[in-house]
Amino acid sequence: MTNVADPQVPATDATVSRAEVCVVACADVFRDNGEVLASAFGTIPSIGVRLARQTFSPDLLISDGESYLVRGAWPVGAPATGEIEAWVPFRTIFDLVWHGKRHVMMIPSQVDRYGNTNISAIGDYRRPTVQLLGVRGAPGNSVCHPTSYWVPRHSTRVFVPRVDMVSGVGNDRAAQAGPGASRYHDLRRIVTDLAVFDYHPEHGTLRLASVHPGVTVAQVQAATGFPLEADDDVPQTRLPTAEELRLIREVLDPRGLRNREVAG
Amino acid sequence: MADKRMTAQDVVGRLRSGMTIGIGGWGSRRKPMALIREILRSDLRDLTVVSYGGPDVGLLCAAGKIRKLVFGFVSLDSIPLDPHFRAARQAGALEVVEYDEGMLQWGLYAAGLKLPFLPTRAGLGSDVLTHNPRLRTVADPYGGDEVVAMPPLHLDVALIHMNRADIHGNGQFLGPDPYFDDLYCMAAEQAYMSCEKIVPTAELTATAHPATLRINRLLVTGVVEAPNGAHFTSCAPDYDRDEDFQREYAASAASPDAWRAFRDRYLAGSESDYQAAVAARRAEVSA
Image (cartoon, rainbow over all chains, first blue to last red; front, side, top):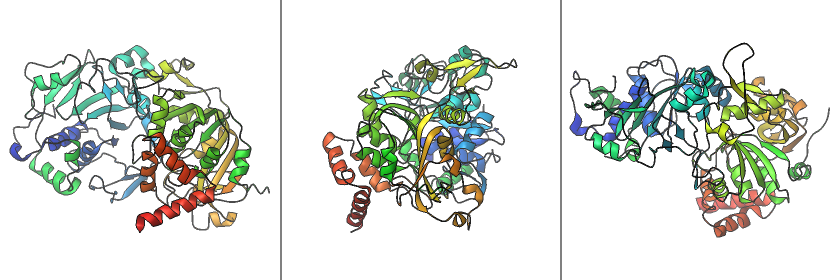
């Protein structure tokens, strides 16, 4: 388990913020991914993939958010400055999605216990109470390549018993839909501001993999709208190493934008 | 060779209520906004719109022009959600057909290639299939996986905006992404292209690679020169998105009064009135 505290690394917990723990948890999602397009939505995941590339996953490919893949490390919220290594207009991204050498981290508005996610609409589909973005690429992403999620505010509004419009396909729905959906379906992790989840290898249900320092399992359960699956002894999410902290604070997010996404 | 130049009024004069119209660009990027504004000035209604949606969709929703929207998302990019589109959806004022964005591309491509469908895994297991009961899956005749048979998205009309074009309908993108504009044109009975500037054909490749000539004249019915015609969406490298104006557009969804004020100031007159109002606003803001 790569997201569990490494006793070899001296803890510097008193000075580490929750946002920084989340950055490292997001980075760990992309550990050992090899040469894939790492697409991260949100501030903290964007810092996370760049941190992963600067440290333990040097082969990741990262977009400038427009149409180029760019090398190097640049601060989140600022234009990319590294060498351009590829031209990837949207239709090339679409090709890569279906090709499969991509790992996406999206931000769902609703998630259920099988990892079905909703970014389309809340309420009655014909007349939603809250219209969101639309499914975008979530249906294709989730059945074609590894998919993870980032939830900046873990609550019972996000973690619900049943999502209103399945946009990203969960483990139960992929299995029901047959091999066309399940062959390349590969849900990896969900990182939230409280905890990290993976999935039970047989049941496909969300499983508490670690809680962030200072968070209890009871707190996570209270913020989750369905019964949690957790071992008796849930580990703590690891802290950043001194070098990771330096990269986050000095190179990847000198303006502290991470603290606007997750406080404390 | 045909000279296909026409005005935005000529283009909209050829449209009819109830038509299916595909709109190029992506989100709040290189949208044919001058042509959209011309539709807002017309009495067209009950349109079916196919779009990787941005403020094109929002404005047409606010003006009550859309009966049915075929889409994968609607976003203003720097502002994640378009409030006019949201208001229309939340009022139940819109019929929608929602696709994964790759399925939307496949539908345009299938129409362009005159195929009955194109296969894809995208959509399987999701509620895209639940809410589109017309969608079918198809067995692999070679024994592999059953997949979605994405039907063609036939368009009566495609509207796109490019950086440069010649009078014959060859169109050029100079920004970072061609988006899917050529596929919209291929899927359409008639395709109309506005552009920042019409230039002699030879000038198109004087400094740019021929690969930037994404739109071929055999796909294009008419060409409209519309400087600043993508405003307030981006049209790199000619200009970036007008973020300040986009915020004002988004704020105009706050109330019927706010929308009326926006409409009266920017949309009541001609395209040159619009551009003058935008210039006046810019002068006010920078004063």
